[in-house]
Image (spheres, rainbow, N blue to C red):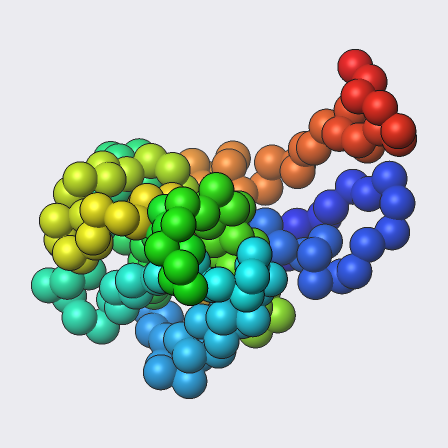
Length: 195
């Protein structure tokens, strides 16, 4: 399913078509080739010193036991729709540089760039991704054995968006709502900070 993106200035179609659905095709499963492509895109994100501070843990729906455990780490609201996605991804950021062990204040920023690459790759493949902040970090840390020197940044549901004709009435209300963003003049200024 595609959504209209109201633009003030032209941008690449890939960026304009990326959005975060909450209705996924529960019958769609990913193969290893698709999964590898998602993480290959993440691998090529920019990072300070080329340090690549990110680590992703993927939970594939085809492994029902691991999938249910990962799903149970999400907030109830997110569980209700993410259960139909094909892949749950946990994005983690190293607090320290790999190359010298000193604190990396850019690790979270760089991990966000890698996560967005993953989301854009999903869009380019006709899939969708929805990043979430509603999860229990400690549950995820324990489940996935994430070391203490990594911050758990986000969970990402990836899958095939449900076609508009298959949406329930409740899903239609959320999925068909117009996309909104603050106007350009509120998000950047030239030469100095402006309100």
